[in-house]
Amino acid sequence: MPARKRVAVLISGRGSNLRALIEASETGADYPARIALVLSNKADAEGLRIAREHGIETAVIESRGKERAAFDAEMHALLQSKGIELICLAGFMRLLTPEFVQAWYGRMINIHPSLLPAFKGTQVHERVVASGVRVTGCTVHFVSPEMDEGPIILQATVPVPPDATPQSVAAAVLEQEHALYPQALRLLAEGKLTIEGQRVRVL
Ligand code: GRF
Image 1 (cartoon, protein in one colour):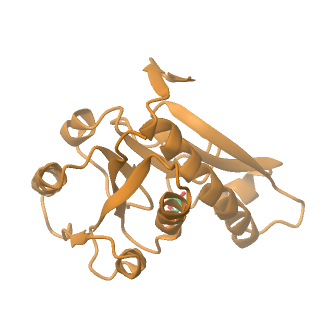
Image 2 (cartoon, rainbow, N blue to C red):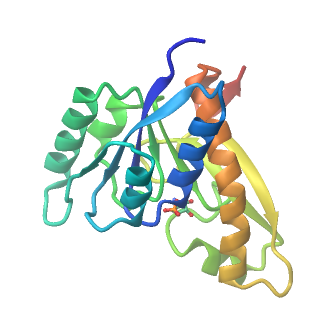
């Protein structure tokens, strides 16, 4: 098997998608990626504890009060120094500079809890329920400079029943996220994805 790709997961909070990625890389003998670094912009992110429990290196670069360009440059330098090849954003609540995104374009992916391009941004499940849609879901996409707009890799759908609440939808979508994100990282790490404009071809 070729060497596993070295992945950094960037988080700001809970880290349940981080956990799903860690578990996939630990349990799948043929999983083509390993989580080499977990980087948080908040020192109290719960996900840091999950990483430490699994013996994964962690780093904190506080973003509060820092210029965006300086913060991104610091992150970039750290990621380079650790030999990181791929980045997964997993609840990383910080906008990235176009320079950082360009530097990692095609090697950085994100998960979003809606069927993009619907419901970009935050407060997704509240807006989903209020809108009356019958179906929602989650999306893994390449990160491009415009938030939640990069080429789509995989999506999974979740029904929105008549009695749905933002909490019930969030829980159902999150379950799908935990299955979808490891699948998408596998495809990326195996070199099976090519970007053609806004579309992604899966080999
Ligand atoms: C997830 O819903 C993800 O789709 C969104 O932020 C949330 C992160 O949750 N980008 P967790 O930290 O992975 O538990």
